[in-house]
Amino acid sequence: MASSTYQHIYAVVSRIPRGQVATYGQVAALAGLPGRARQVGYALSALNDPSIPWHRVINAKGEISLRSGGSAGDELQRLRLEEEGVGFDSHGRIPLHIYRWQP
View 1 (cartoon, one colour):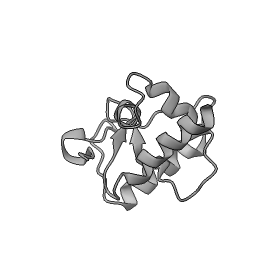
View 2 (cartoon, rainbow, N blue to C red):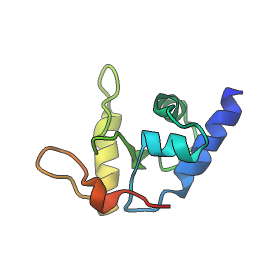
View 3 (cartoon, one colour):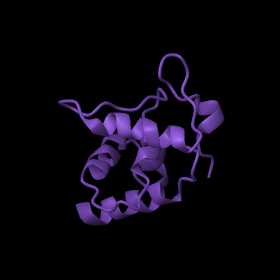
């Protein structure tokens, strides 16, 4: 069951265009899993496919969610987003009114 659920999540994440972001909750809702934002995080942490743009998923505050125990992935996520033209404000947040994906 988890693998099917994860596949739905990965399908949604794969649709997020370059230069835009989606929140965990938004991905969950679009995958037919409303209220299960945490499940999106679990799915992305288990991701083995480099073609899926995991870096485009952020939290509802417009922030990169820090990984437990610290990780180079946090900085990599920011760098990838910046390379795509996604901007951050002085507090390290992405202005969702500008960069949020509207499918």
